[in-house]
Image 1 (cartoon, protein in one colour):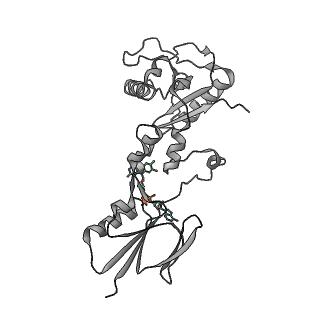
Image 2 (cartoon, helix red, strand yellow):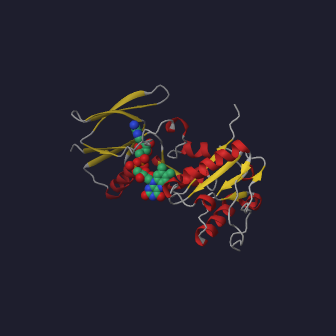
Image 3 (spheres, rainbow, N blue to C red):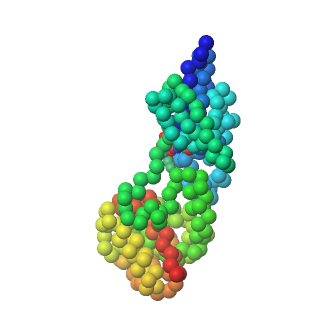
Length: 264
Ligand SMILES: Cc1cc2nc3c(=O)[nH]c(=O)nc-3n(C[C@H](O)[C@H](O)[C@H](O)COP(=O)(O)OP(=O)(O)OC[C@H]3O[C@@H](n4cnc5c(N)ncnc54)[C@H](O)[C@@H]3O)c2cc1C
């Protein structure tokens, strides 16, 4: 009896879990094949742990061939899909030679591409966070905690935010936390909500340009939960080459951007 051919294209969450479901059910009249560019399944939710060196990259990848015993696996790049004649062309190998695979049913699980929303210059300058290569590039970017001259804090002057941010800084910077200079522009200009992140970024760039760390205004009575160096009341002059800007919630969505002096 001729078996029904199911072809799954893409070995990410959608494709692999579709294949695993077929593995479980073991239909005798269906043959299943999966094509993916890589011979590994990448657990994307933990990519940032690899970027932060909290996990080794081997902890978030799993060989697809090892996970699938009955579904045939083809490592290769899908070049084209002919919906009329029901076949897929894939290329692989050093010479990128091609194969054509026929199917009766096809499952599309090729994922998506990063959208830069046509923001000028973003695609050329941004570091994306989608592949293992992206995480490794970020991990190897090589900014050590003690290289950060100034942390422009999200610092909203609310007790929960400020004490939580202090804990996060201690967790991220380790022993270097106590000697980092930290201040919040919101102490002077308030919370600009959606524009808060850009105001902090401008403070960072101005600080690098002028060698000035702007202070945390009105910090007369420190919260015992916030026991780091928050540059109280008076600006400081000095070396400002590398600045981390924390933007959480409004105007940042839990992002940390690092700005560095550019030496031409
Ligand atoms: C950093 C990060 C963190 C995330 N955290 C979470 C989270 O905590 N919770 C959550 O629910 N979601 C999270 N997501 C989103 C989640 O990863 C995606 O929603 C999910 O991966 C989408 O599954 P998919 O199968 O559609 O695509 P993907 O998992 O991207 O899989 C697409 C697959 O197709 C392959 N492929 C693409 N083009 C071709 C081609 N031409 N030929 C062959 N193969 C091809 C790719 O190599 C990949 O294996 C996160 C995503 C990222 C990037």
